Length: 323
Image 1 (cartoon, rainbow, N blue to C red):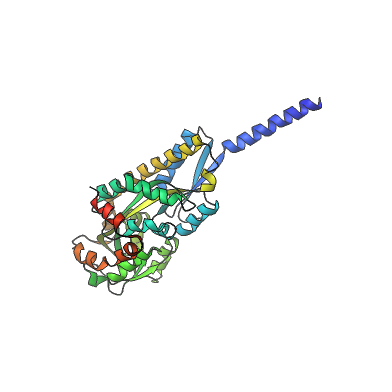
Image 2: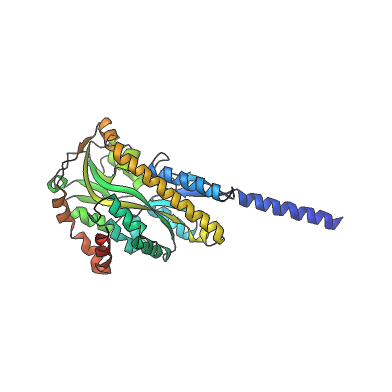
């Protein structure tokens, strides 16, 4: 009888453990709203992971910087307090310096060029570098080409940037580029940005149309200049503490979910590139499109030295050579 009770209790314990494991919730953190391109990508990750795993893994979002800024969340991945993060590459360079190359101004010609680089050998090599730094690079996602907004005046030439306090990411390449173009770069975590714009701590910021619309910056900014000065990738990152504890099959589910996330995010970027400018105008922003980018590019050129002096020009030249 004792053996029967013990066996029954053991069976219940095993089933309880299995149920707990089957309901394992994976949190996907990011800096934007659930309605944003990041939110759409995060939901695609969750839906794909749940489907492939047959419910062994489920998921939920921690949007809008609920768990900290992007740098904070990346650090969380390294120590295992975060599961999955969708982040811009801006702060990632502080952990994986080679990634700074992707943030060089006026490096990418257009979306096809950028996506071909990230989906090809160069992108895979950089994911490998990420994996050497207590992170797991699962897939390249996207923000889009970055543009300048501000509350003071239209920006058509570098002279119009003179003296503007412009929030940038915590990224030395971006900061050097904007210093060269005449602005006063002010690094700041994204969750702090809207309030800083509202209170006049900074005059402006720079982000893709996707982020400008998702954040409703028209409430605190009057002018948008389509400078397209930097292509901003995003990346789906995982915690090695989580992923190293999975079977090969389970890890495969996560990698497929990351690919689905990137695909959904890029599709939303495409949509917003077509409709976003009209939305900005509809909400009262002045959109400046007639911009000669050459003077901006010339003044931003010294920022390349930050990267090439330390790592050499080879990667930059390879990126520029991709068709």
